[in-house]
Length: 239
Image (cartoon, rainbow, N blue to C red):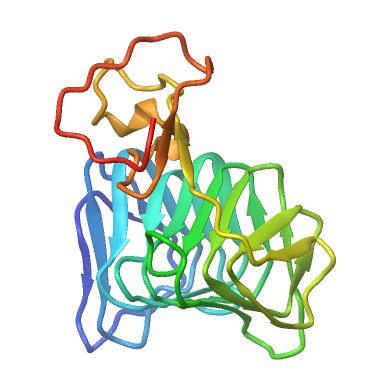
């Protein structure tokens, strides 16, 4: 087992083997994979805090599991993610607000949060392609977690989780659990008070452990009765 508590940088020469890769650092980390050979065991993000951000494409094997047990895996500005079965735990978040694609060799099971918003911000072009590694073979999406899907192009996806893809393209062979809606709703972020303090910029205080973006509405709906302290300059779509 390799336990990574800092940034992961793989040179062009590559590193192979069947070892497990656990990413557990307590602060932000990045993954840069320049080579073509990566350890072929299960990759797991299990962080008490911080985000793992791709700084290059991450191409795991199409039968290679990716677990996001706790913490956030962010695809970065434009990087592609390929993996086998993807499991997002109750404290985990898979996020892509850039233009990178998602290619699946297995199913997606979500008990936490999946955010796929092509290009981020307001609705625009469908920048994120969601694809199966085998054309015509559907990949199953399951789980009672939160799916926030917008500005994506979807093909060969199915499952039992009820997913609405807003301002997105149905390219075909998708299951009935996928609904495509041309509307462009304003995304929200709910104050859940899960952080250690009352500060606005403590992202654990917000749903999905993500601070509100400038394009989101910050919601105070009684989920938490903890006060919120605006300790930084704030720019949001509304409150």
